Length: 186
Image 1 (cartoon, rainbow, N blue to C red):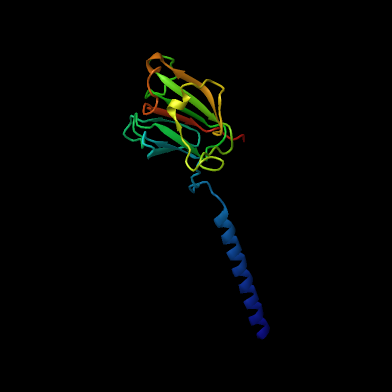
Image 2: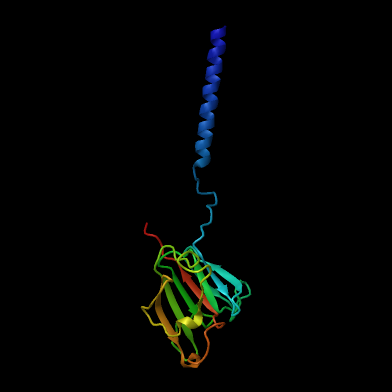
């Protein structure tokens, strides 16, 4: 009788242990129907002419155009004067445009600057940089394609300044931002 009780107890313990282990393993399997956690690919933080943070854009998984004239945007049209980068992947393209369509048109009434990050990750809030280094859009007026910006880990891919902006500030004139994250090789 004692033998059968011991055998029953051992069998019950084995079943409970196996059931618990299989339940744990099943809980860890991704079945494709569950939501995957969102990944942060970094942020572009914008400031007004007084140096106050006014909005930010998160780097998308692939690419996205942000038209600041749309009411759905967190950034307002013609309000940003400077920016900083935080945790941006290498080879991310960031284009700043004066016009709302993000046009690359080299017209007299247009300007744009196209940047590419060159370090993984590109972050201006970590040493050796000061606590919150920023770049004003006017800093790009005298840059040309191929220029590497010292201590910022960005390269100018292209830049255009139409004749109507030759003697005007670029600060507080940005209307559209295009961001394209470099896709990992699979």
